Image (cartoon, rainbow, N blue to C red; front, side, top):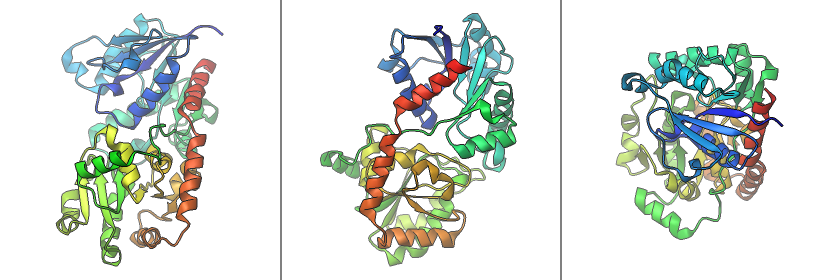
Length: 375
């Protein structure tokens, strides 16, 4: 096999790390073991100090240019990055953040569009975010030599809305990290419970809060039936990125007053395994996403999940399903089922762990690298 020079957009590692950063970190850890290719990682304003980045197979580079342009993700990508990529004479460029430099044509390009909700549901985003994500992502995917996404549903959306041929799209479901487990030390769980003042029994909703995840329906449904299940509480963790804006403080006010809910804008990454393990259920629904890694993190932690039909494939059918996540009656029905325990909890937990262990970052990293090589 010919040794390739592969450029990688690694800017997500500079910012407060979310789902995309977690994907890239796990991929890079496996690619660092490959001696077949040379990897050049590009950063916008600074190079993080992670030890795994200091590997002989990785070359780390800062994009050069005026600070005013480097202040904005899309401007740095479209104006400054093309010059750097061309100078490095790449064989292929892996654009990990939904779009690639449109003026760059000197090598093969593969774009990762993990989902395209910004195109299919623009009302959920501000005008600027819609502009910087949707327009540039669509053009990037159409001209790319390949597109990577995280579910069959998202592949169908890319094919339909972006008019990208199905044979140019790689679907690769995401994997939970091995650090998530149902055998977490009890002292660690106690530490996290004390740190966040968590209740003894609670539903956990965690991650970036966006309209498509129906958090308003979930909260209002829980409020409707909270008197039926006085031992259950609701814990919400995540940054509020709703658009149109949902005032979560107001929506949760009576639950907070009654000490039936907790809202935490941000939790430390090191605390996530114990947070999942401490919860009675993890709930995440969507009318847009075909994949979310946090469902599998929870399942691997031994905590069953409540979700929506769109995410059924991602969890191998191992969860309690809200038929219409935008409908309060349907949501209440499933929450009642969960809290009344009229289901086989042990089987749901066992099957969920088995399913999650089948999906590994090693196989995902190999699938993506094989796809890059095949372009």
